[in-house]
Image 1 (cartoon, protein in one colour):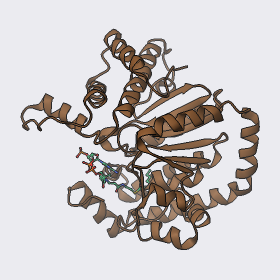
Image 2 (cartoon, protein in one colour):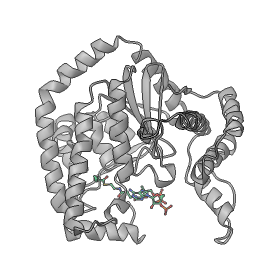
Image 3 (cartoon, helix red, strand yellow):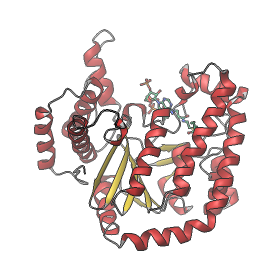
Length: 364
Ligand SMILES: CCCCC/C=C/CC(=O)SCCNC(=O)CCNC(=O)[C@H](O)C(C)(C)COP(=O)(O)OP(=O)(O)OC[C@H]1O[C@@H](n2cnc3c(N)ncnc32)[C@H](O)[C@@H]1OP(=O)(O)O
């Protein structure tokens, strides 16, 4: 089991720095950049260096990584550094013990940091330089991590993001990798993957809590309707710009949002793409409670650790009785939303929106 501090002290941070020096294997350039950027953010705050020239490749990569952390608080950067080193040490140690043929993902993830401590399995989206956009690998890894968490000995499971974003939603470059069967096959495969992915959230048997550390976009917002509690930093925002992207709601939000916040408020979000602040999302019932960003991690993890001490079977059974009444309906909604989206992905409206983003002509 990985050992991870939920709130890293200066001592934990120093220990992690020493651990990095002791790593037996080179963790690779991408991880080294992450370590560098988190270290700088934790010790100096937001990026304060002038941007290096385009030909100064190494310093430019370092600057990009640090700058991508935006205004991430020092305390959070320190925590994320400790988490990263912890997951790194265990994945590099355990990878040497993996037997041939064993699933790599049972020990290490490319797009997530998964740790378990104090009765809590924490699944952290870990593509901070891409604002934790969900690429195809991340969809698969989250499903894998949820299935593993449903069977491990933790009492509750938490989803959160590394860096300044919770998640910017579906990675729009997912649309660029066209298989031999063309865009129709791409859309069909996407709908199958999405249905299976959302199904894992519908069926997840333990209390599932979102710790929304920063802005959330698209599918990372709609899924919140399937969580059992949602805690948000006051830096978080909630944005579902489906019409802007020529798309339609997913994650069962066409059913959960009107129930949670009233049909008219759901329409403002899902049809007109109104972005909510954390306070507004809380007033509308999508978020359970909002915390000041400066104390967010400390307060939330203290609370979660207390929840995780409650009798796990009682929590599981109580969740089951709440969720079971809705399960069949949720699966039917999921199937319908995926089928509608499959058609949307082939529309000019959607293709133009994706091309505009990828050619840097548009951003949310
Ligand atoms: C199996 C398929 C299932 C599909 C399910 C469908 C889901 C629907 C949705 O989720 S809709 C939501 C889609 N998301 C977006 O449209 C967000 C697009 N991103 C943005 O508008 C902006 O990046 C931003 C507002 C999130 C952040 O802007 P900011 O200026 O702060 O940062 P950058 O734009 O410079 O971002 C840093 C790098 O990250 C890349 N990136 C961010 N989000 C995405 C994304 N969703 N898809 C792909 N790439 C993303 C961005 O391009 C930058 O990359 P670069 O450093 O290489 O330039």
